Structures are given as structure tokens and as C-alpha cells.
Picture 1 (cartoon, rainbow over the protein chains, first blue to last red):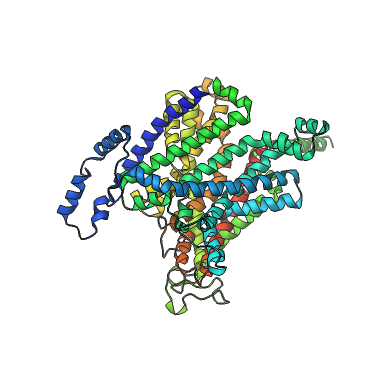
Picture 2: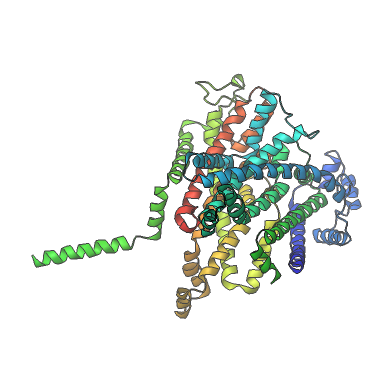
Length: 309
Length: 302
């Protein structure tokens, strides 16, 4: 098990190198640069040159990359070209917001979608099943940013119940979290339902019922537990995608998370900031997927056996 | 007399032969047709395509779609302007109809591009294995590690904001997944006897990969590609919404929502219709995707 985890962690290193090199080269292609963003349109050539010289921006892209990687090996993710602030510190400052949003959204989605998915599977073919599936289809087809706008129009502008944007308290979290949750719910409900349908007619469920296990317990302890693997996978993927891809929701609700930090930094051609943030986000997502794989081992002993091979 | 019986028998035999030789695609279509959801999806997408084509003749691009008419700005939906007008007095109905072409054509183009590249890479990785496979799959890992929307944003801001770049930006993030699906599928086919037979008959690798292996491993790829169209349409609209895809005054749905965002106080109808258009289109493609999956791969049917 430990060997498996170590192997997975080691495999992360080449991915990180690839991601950072790719981002560095891509950002080099981008028109304009950090000096022009920082100094504005009125800067003279001399000023621009000095600004670039100070930050080593005049060196070729591979030299800059090598310097950057040397820094990373020493645990230094560099400083922003624009604000001169430490990349890691800036990232860690924004991360709690993104984590808060991602976890609350996913938690909401998991709670409702497991209930809905199980009910739909148990009532297969009835009107309840169809309504749940139609709702899931609508949720799956709704663009997040539109849903966010609709929620703002409804709950902030018309009803005046919740703030439309910002992050100054718990009430600011509600709308973004619900927006994020709806899209996830759609997918998780579908996964739960189909995964439950696969196990619900298995012999061991019938055996359990025949032995006198109540229907409730048969569903909860026998069926759901065996249906969990695909559901956990989906939850892991959803959580990962909301850590990296919450840009849209963060933009709609002016939520000060990592996604907006990255988008802003791309706009400012702040290569160290973009690269650093993407490396960190990628690492967190990879860790998360690793944790999901470890959870498998506890849910399903058969998988544990595979890991130790 | 004798000859007529033979003839009849012949006809029977021929008819039977015809039934047996019903191809895979006819079978898929038969399954697809039976599904109400799939046909509904096809109907929805069909209607949107018809509307997009008709819009071409009904609305003049310069006059109705991007032409400004400030005296009629910000009007609520009415008989004259079904969906109301935007801040420059442009008819939102005309713009929504006109916008369909962007979403649908870019959606198709991106999925086609990512499928072509992904399938080729996946086939090479799956067929050759070894170093080829390691290189291709590790590259795929790298691209898969970056969240798709962020990858798209990076690419668009680096290489410029035009429709061509948008197609590439959205495709790149889909390529790794297509590569994986295609590789897995090719691996199940590559050791089959007909591949060996082709090799024994002297066919070279290119012919074997493209004529024998790929053709027989396409089903999962097609399922994956159809399911991806809807995600691609949302991705395009999302990029345009944050100002990085197609920009105003082009009537792309995401871009329209982006500008409507400034007027949700008091003119919320502006934000309603473009979003509804995205949702209905995406729903149509989702239904088709589910239908294709169920009819092409009955094992996956839930």
C-alpha cells in the first residue's frame, strides 16, 4: 500500500515538469508582457527594458524556465512579475476560498444526489424515476454561468435575500455553492442511479432479504455499499474539477478564489504566477485522486489486494 | 412452372440474405429510433439547425443582428421583438437564432478535431505499445492534469482570440480523453485473428491500423465524441462569457450573456434567452449522446 502511494507520488514529478514547461512556452507566445502590463501605455522603451532586466525577462524562455525550475527544487515558486509578491503566499491566501466553495458545493451535491439516485433506482420506471432523470438532464445541460445569473436575478435582485457577489460571510457562500452543486448533482445522480441499478438485482441482495434483512438495511448496507465505487470515483472527479475549474462560478459571483487569480494573472502575462498556481492546483487535484484511490481500498477489500501486488 | 418456383425460391433466399446482411449501422439506427429521448434530441437539434439556416434568410446580419438601433434599446419582450431588445436596440430573437451557427459549428469542429487527433494518437499507442505508448500516454497525462477551462484560457490568450484558435483551445483539452478511449479500444482489437491474417497477407502497419484495427474499434470513440459535443458547446460559451472567446458584437450566446450581465438589474430578460438557447441545444446533444451510447454499446445501457 505504502509502495503504491509512493509510486503514485513519484509519477507526479514528470507531469509537473511537463505542465510547467508547457505553460512557460505558451505564456511566451502571448502578445504583450508583464512589463507592459505593469508600467502601462506611457512607459518608455528604456523603462520597459529596465523592468524586464530586473526580472530577467530579457533572457530566452528556456533560460527563464531553467531558473524557475532551480527555484522550485529549493521550494521557491518564484515571485510575481507584476506585484513582486511571493507566488506561494498569494496562492495560499486565495486557496481557502476555493476550497470552501468546492467542498460545500460538492457536499451539497453528494447529499442530495445519493438520495435522489437511490430513490430513482429503487422506483425504476415510475414517474418518480423519470422526473429525477429529467431534472438531472436539465441540470446537466445548464451552463453554470447562466444558472448563476438566474440565481442572482431571483434571490438577490428580486427577493433581496442573498448578496449577489463577494465573500464577506456565510450568506455569500450560498448562491455560488448551490450553483456549483446543481451541475455536480446532475452527474452524481445519474452515476448513483446506474450504479445502484447494477447491484440491486444481484443474488446477494435477494439472499439478504430472504435472511430477513429489512428492505431499508438491504439497500443501505448491502446495495449502496457495493454501488459505492463508481460513486466515489465520480465524487473525486467532481471535487477535483471544482478545485481547478471553478473559474466560471468565481467570475459570476466575484468570489476571490484561485480560479480568478489564475485568469487575472493570465491577462497580466504574469508567467510565474500562472505557472505556480497551475502547478499547485494540479498537485492538489492529483493528491485528491490519490486519496480517492486509497479510499477504494477501504470500501472494497478486493482492490486493496490489487494495490499490494 | 418449374422455373417460376426456382425464381421464387431464389427471391426468398435473396430476401433472407438481405436481412442477415443488415449492417451494424442499420442496427444502431434501429436501436436509436426506438428510444424516445434520442429521437427527441435529434428533433431538438434538427429544429435548431433549421432555425439557424432559416435565420440566414430572415434576418440580415448587418441590419438586424449587429446593426444598432438605439431608439429601440432595452425593450421588454413584445410582439415586435419576441425576446426583447438589448442595450443597443438589437433584436435578441434575431441574435439568438443567428448565434446557433457558432455554437453548433464550433462544437462539431472541435469534437471532430479532437477525435481525429485523439484517435490517431490512441491507435498508435495501442497498436505499437512500448516506447511509443509511453511517450503518447505520458503526454496525455500532462494535458489531462491541467483543468480544461484553464488550459483553454491559456491557449486563447496566447494565440489570439479568433474562432480558429477557439476550436483548437477547446479541442486540446479533449484530446487526452479521446486518446485514452481509442487506445483502450485498439488494444482489445489488435491481437485478434483478422489482424494477424492481414499481417500474414502482407499488409503494412498503416493499412492494418487504419483499415482493420481502427474501423473495428471505433464504437467507444463515437460514443465518447457524441457525448462530448454538449460539453464543448458549454465550454465555448463559457470562454466567451468570461470575455476570451467570441466577443461582442458577434451574437454568440456566451458573449450575449456576458454583456447582458451588466443589465440584469431591471432588464433581466436579456440574460434569459441566450442561456435558454444554450440549455436547449446542449440538452438536445445530451439526449442524442445518451441514445448513441445506448444503441451502439448495449452493454453500457443502464
